[in-house]
Image (cartoon, rainbow, N blue to C red; front, side, top):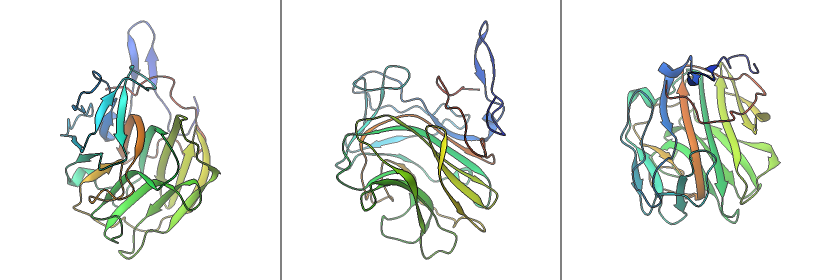
Length: 241
């Protein structure tokens, strides 16, 4: 087993792995479904309503697991999850994971955000493709005035599936790509409280920096830093229990 918190248990004879931190999973999207479907099921215990904005849909053109993924066309598409206190990380540890595949890297593209607007300073944290640096960037807001951004040490690529993970462990935040740490920064104090919806595929509820491409196997865990450093990326879908 790799990673200080990676303790998944599996029995090949009885079924898939069991997640010892499933109670901490606040959002779990497998992106499974029929081609063109606009249903995005949350398999966490919260069973949240996930709304597709614009032309957001399930596509069977690309996938990592399950034969389908979420496709967003870069023109007003995103997934929106209604605000809830259980989606606020505050000062807790957390782990966000997703498989992502951009169609192109000619613009800014948001992966995760919980903030009112792309340009505003009210919000918690975000992860996105940064056109200015051609790298993946994460930013955390504890001051209420800014999101200091930290770039990955490697450049992003289009038309390639990437396993991205953003994790906070105490005062250390890190980004991993393909299980390897590519960025670290210090985050002191609680993230700013935000009543904004959680957005997948944009930077803010106004859908700045829209995602153009595919997303698959998305999991957000609050209260646990699952890995604490380099880890082995899951070879199958995340467990549903």
